[in-house]
Picture 1: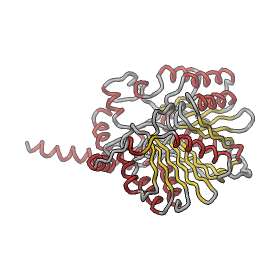
Picture 2: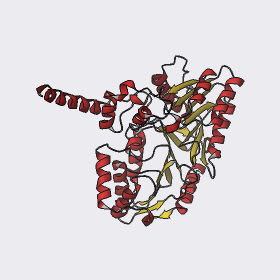
Picture 3: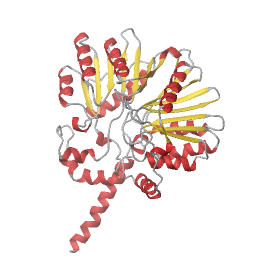
Picture 4: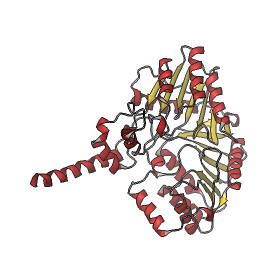
Length: 425
């Protein structure tokens, strides 16, 4: 009995220590990136707004792959059959081309790429880096600490190819690589990059020029600590900056939240704010939205109705928004939603487009996420395209009361789960 009373506090202490360390441990290289601004011309920035079937974005990816002859760096999960065939074809056309695929190690049953796709690419000479998600911070530290101390010792994502207990327990850690990035040379000495949420999504940003270097550099660092492959290439060389009117930056993980909070912090009376995301729950972002509304900014928020805790968050924004926050729901979506944030003020548009929704796992350096930040005149073609995209989604949305959850019990349950890091939002 005495021995049991001694071991129990030790076990609890070890559990708590592992949870605390993996919630705050140093981030691996290539994460939490806020690149220096790259000045681009209007012709170097294109907004790809897919209207149906998502084929527009995948067609851009395939076209960029087809032009490449030196280097392709792609972060994608799941990898579509068409993109996989495109990579194999380029290896055949250009035997010396370097192709690096960074991919989530989840099995196909949990949203990953079929293992036979990855193995066929490796046999063809493609460097496949399956992300070591355990190097990242934990989303649900209390569960993940217990998992690390028990099941984690006998659980390898590369062995868990079929759905089963070990794979299911690993999946409950709530970790993922959700970046969707492509960098490729254009076959003529230049570079193209494409950032989207998912291949069948509704929005992406394509750029040409020096931003590709920052994207590739981040991805190659992740590939290095995930694979240890000594064949990894160097990122593209920096180009000479030219004239332009658009400042573009790569943002990843927590840097996305920092930029979003800075942009919302400038919004006041006369300014327009638009947010569209699958999910909104991150406390600091919600607070920044409410403060912008309190300063007189007009805020429109478009959310997916089926994702928790959007219903109670919408009710909070409606209740505390001083009449300056409008809410709508994206119903019957044909395409997956990219996350979009817009702040228009004094003739300039700030925009963030990417895969990261506005939740703690996406914005608190837990999952791997990516976004492109753009600062540009409102008259720029890219600015007009983003505002048109948001306005079209807004016009098709359902009114606030339809899916709102105004129950105090649901609200406080959400606040507790989010604050205690007990949920994947």
